[in-house]
Length: 307
Image 1 (tube, rainbow, N blue to C red):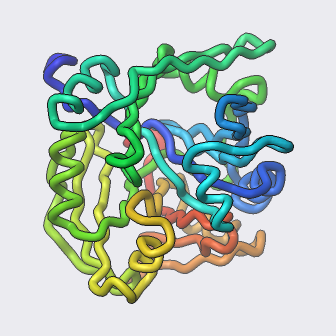
Image 2 (image 1 turned 180 degrees about the vertical axis):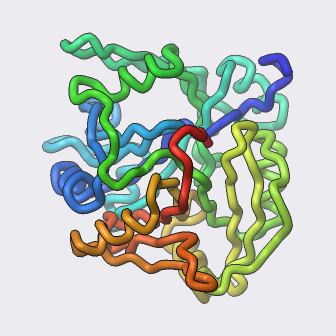
């Protein structure tokens, strides 16, 4: 398959957690949750500051208002309403210019490609291009990004002066993400038509979430699971829709050793709910009160498989 025949979105690039206090959330994710925190800096144009968790196939971004600055954009709305947690995500595109053109052909109003750059004093300068749907059309939807540096060089530059290091939790990749939508059919049409996602299985029901699920997938193989509440006033997905609208709801990470990760988290005082059908541990959910509002699940994974 040539680059021009690829769907405009190939993989998850990064996932954003909005937090009130960047230093406090850094300590939580490092000391309690066992993530190596690195990179990041200050963005004066948006009035924000961030820190990064670099995984094998993408990265997590802790994003907060810059001290003594007025934040702008989606993070400002989140903080005004007192929320923390997942606030957005970016999908990797191979060609931002082509992606912008395709989205315009599909009836979207698009900003970009726009150039971004981070200049450092440590030799970790990096640059990228983004394509965003305008807010009246893209609320809750991802934006597209292409980093000018790729592969291990991109990961090295993302890590910055702190460098890359294993995560004590054993986290490796993003296995799947869950998107809260009001309807499976309309949500599926949007992600298929705009971003080129394809079917990854049949519709199912999740009794804990009180929602119907529909799995889609990116070209990379990472699953994007749409979740629509069975009733608009019942369950955590319905609550998320009422509070924040459609968008990123939960993220599932692969870890090297799931039982060890669960034991370690519990020893650190983190609430963990496990899924053990027939006595076999297959998944674990971290209590979002211990993750600054971000719903994070853990599943077994192999270190050499990228999502």
